[in-house]
Amino acid sequence: MASLFRITSNNIFKPSSRSFATAVQKQVASTSEPNTHFKITLRRSAIALGERKKETLVALGLHRRMQTVYHVHSPEAAGKILKVKELVEVENVPAKAVRSQSEQRKERKASRGYQVQGTKLGGFEWETS
Image (cartoon, rainbow, N blue to C red; front, side):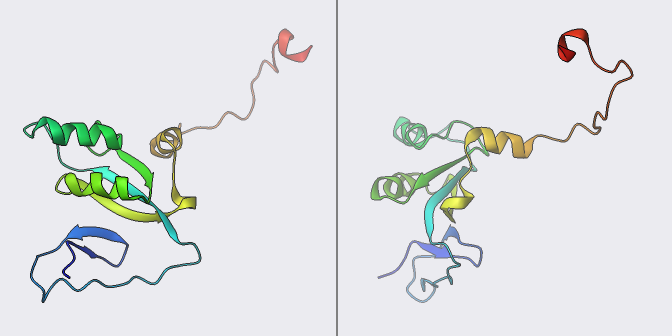
């Protein structure tokens, strides 16, 4: 049976052609940890699409372009991904690579450009007591 996706070298699922000649699925050698989560990134906007597609994106937790969410491998998540496969990029990741929303925000945040070593005042009265 032909696969609708092909697996690239870095575990990203991309749509493949539907012919049997090019629909050979390659197994990627797994590392020490098995891939247990989908990393789903919304790449295309759903503005001109129907309400069902928009509702599917909301059910996945995707609201903005370039937003990334993580879901555990399940038939429900896989079905939702297939409904909007033209709009999203899906990658299999192990559990240790899963990032919460706040962790993703901290990773994106730029450094301050400086580091405070000390002050000339030596501290305030309420800090020393």
